[in-house]
Length: 79
Image 1: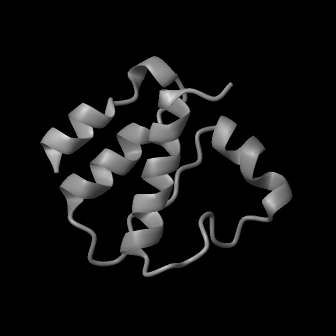
Image 2: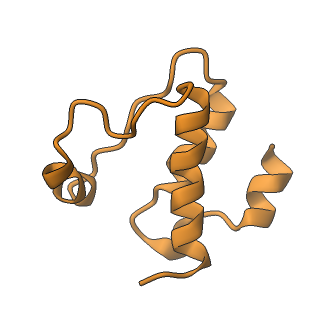
């Protein structure tokens, strides 16, 4: 289901790509396995040099429960 909450997830992925200097998300995970791994709790590691506070925003954006994800207003305030 697409919503603002799914956009927040995507924004977390975008942030990861930005701090990874354009690396492809979910490195070393075959595309066919990404959904299953994510549903089992897999999350990407922090990019090298990424501030812990920024990585925490990414992690919060990747919460399985959409209602537990921050709003864009929350993200803006934290940045």
